[in-house]
Length: 136
Image (cartoon, rainbow, N blue to C red; front, side):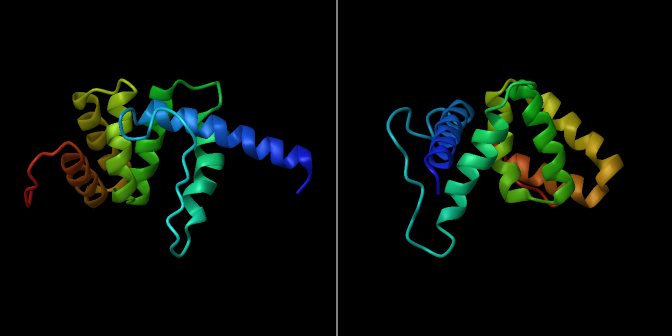
C-alpha cells in the first residue's frame, strides 16, 4: 500500500468515526481511537464499513444526515435487513426523523416492497424503540 493509499484510508476512517459518533451519540465513545475488531471470524468487516460506508458515504456532503437516514431506511426495508434497520431507526431519530415519520416510511414502503416487508420493518422499529411486539 502506498503512502497516499494509507493517508486516504486513514482520512476515511477518521471521517467514518466522526459520522458514526454523530449518528450514535452515547453509544460510540466520543473521543479516542476505536478498534472494532473482536478477534473472531470476519472481524475486519466493521472496520471496512467504518471507512467505506461511514467515511466515504455518510461523511460526504450533498445530503443531510436526515436525508441519508430516509434513504437508508427505505433501502433496508426493501432488503428485509431488520438487524440493520433496528440500528438505523435509532440513527434516524438522532438525525431528526420523528416517530410519526418512521410510521409513514413503513406505511409507504408497503406499497413498494410488499406488506410482509412493511410488517417486518414495523416489528424491527418497535423493537428498536423498546415497544412490545405483537402478532399483527
